[in-house]
Image (cartoon, rainbow, N blue to C red; front, side, top):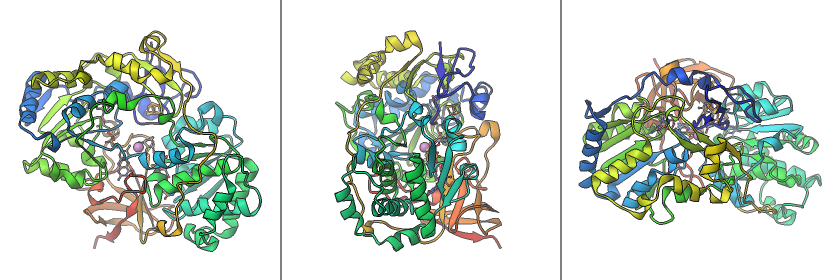
Length: 580
Ligand SMILES: Nc1nc2c(c(=O)[nH]1)N[C@H]1C(S)=C(S)[C@@H](COP(=O)(O)OP(=O)(O)OC[C@H]3O[C@@H](n4cnc5c(=O)[nH]c(N)nc54)[C@H](O)[C@@H]3O)O[C@H]1N2
Ligand SMILES: Nc1nc2c(c(=O)[nH]1)N[C@H]1C(S)=C(S)[C@@H](COP(=O)(O)OP(=O)(O)OC[C@H]3O[C@@H](n4cnc5c(=O)[nH]c(N)nc54)[C@H](O)[C@@H]3O)O[C@H]1N2
Ligand code: SF4
Ligand SMILES: [Mo]
């Protein structure tokens, strides 16, 4: 009997029935501060009853109230918002069936990593990168836009004794612990990758086994080397040195999700992923392996038969909240974590939007909802869990008594109350899981019996396509200070404030100190500036701190631009002002 931590995290730690981490590769029997506090946190700040307009009700009454409201609402003005609060297949994916069958509006699930996935997939046929056991074999590693010391603790443990190189916009903890760190201008990663390609070709060190060098050379001719180097903020010697380190060590390249969320994000992720291929290395990068196991996520969500009436970008949801009358949220905290999330709160308080939240904890979004329904945590329900790093599928067996109603139960109860039927809802969830897992070669029964099963990755091509390739005109550089974010060791995104408190809007910069404001196209927030070891034109904050001193979401100031591959640009230019 085992259980995996289902949080949005590279590591997906697996525990035994006493909640002791298993001593297996690659999670190695240790866990993070959050894993250590989970059993205690499970008793704090929980939503234990249903609430309707602030009044305690039974879950059945709350469902009735939600169904009544839903019945009179145009489905094209109904949106469901869910993300990776719990990576379980039944918790995150399957419940979307109801909304898709109804023809409601869905988001595009783009907030975290879509931009990079799409770009890398275009080059390789799959965004699947190195497996943990492959990572172990490298002599060196490049952490490119990755604060792995905090965000990827088991990856860091496996790689920490290698020769480590970091490319970042600030002296991150990972940079501090690396043998070599290159601090670049925000958003210039595509420029750096192109400059490295030019050096590798020029010096005859690029190999043509996987990449068509003739095509690549032609494409690269459009780029002026001194412009590329100048854009990065590095010296020519530094760029040549990094190229040399690449050829000498043939390192693994870990591409952090932050790369996809900045200027030229998709191009940058794609071009960086090509560097190892240029040295003849197969799958010499790691971004996210979620697409590599063959899990049929579309089948789980039912989009193979029922498409949402519309798809709204996660970056745009807050700003298009006026398009909706009804919002159903689970597994995410959009008021804090989505750009313009404050507009959701505003629309609810003005009576323009009816908000339903299904969450185990009293989040900022739950606190302002019309209806709150208690959800069991991952410690309290059965599910099948995958990792976006290691190849284990896990059958989660609960270690704590269930509180609230599961996502699947809620979906069925709501459908029943509505009198809504669809062939999608006639299929038993566990049977649907079996179909969704068919390409992995694993069945639910086998998982139930064994607890965990290792799967073999699928997909991808041998040769690496040079396209999609940018033109110099397509690469844009930010003008001004760019606000960048990173993982805090004690929090997962907005979670864990019940244990560690809500840290409020501390912004690190090279030169500012004291109380002040950040201003973006969406508005203004109050923050505290602290001096830190960050690059020129960089403002840095932990993404656990996305609430300002007055309680307003930092995301209220962002109006994201869509990247080339559809993902939102979160790392953007903001203006600063000190108080007084
Ligand atoms: N400005 C800015 N914004 C950002 C980012 C940034 O760097 N800067 N980062 C972005 C990134 S990378 C991401 S991934 C997103 C994350 O955005 P969110 O997904 O909103 O992040 P979390 O704070 O982890 O919220 C997850 C929620 O799921 C709930 N949850 C956990 N388990 C369960 C469960 O079993 N059932 C249900 N029903 N709910 C559950 C938790 O209690 C929590 O409320 O934020 C994005 N927003
Ligand atoms: N402890 C902990 N672990 C987590 C999470 C958490 O909240 N806490 N969140 C999880 C989630 S949802 C995600 S998405 C991942 C995120 O984990 P990572 O992919 O590691 O990404 P971040 O930590 O967001 O940022 C990585 C680094 O990118 C740098 N950076 C920002 N902009 C640029 C740029 O333009 N160029 C370069 N080269 N570097 C840049 C930042 O300074 C930061 O040091 O971590 C997951 N793991
Ligand atoms: S948050 Fe990540 S490192 Fe921590 S217990 Fe969960 S999977 Fe492991
Ligand atoms: Mo993320």
